[in-house]
Image 1 (tube, rainbow, N blue to C red):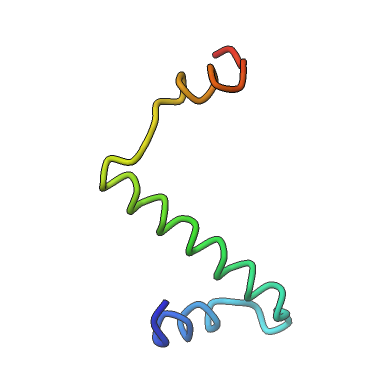
Image 2 (image 1 turned 180 degrees about the vertical axis):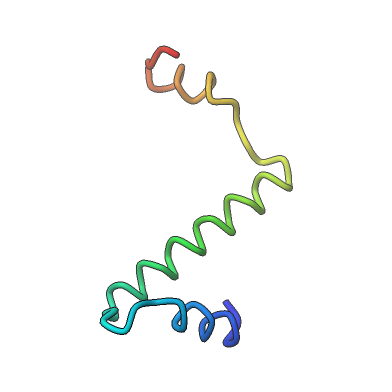
Length: 58
């Protein structure tokens, strides 16, 4: 995360936000960015495959 992006994220948070709130927002943003990068790079699996791995039905 770039410094400018961190500032924007903080500016969007409510005035009563805590450090835990900020850490959560950063974690979520990083997880989404990693997922998007994996998708773009073709490192994804079909839902059916994952459900089968865990014995879940569609």
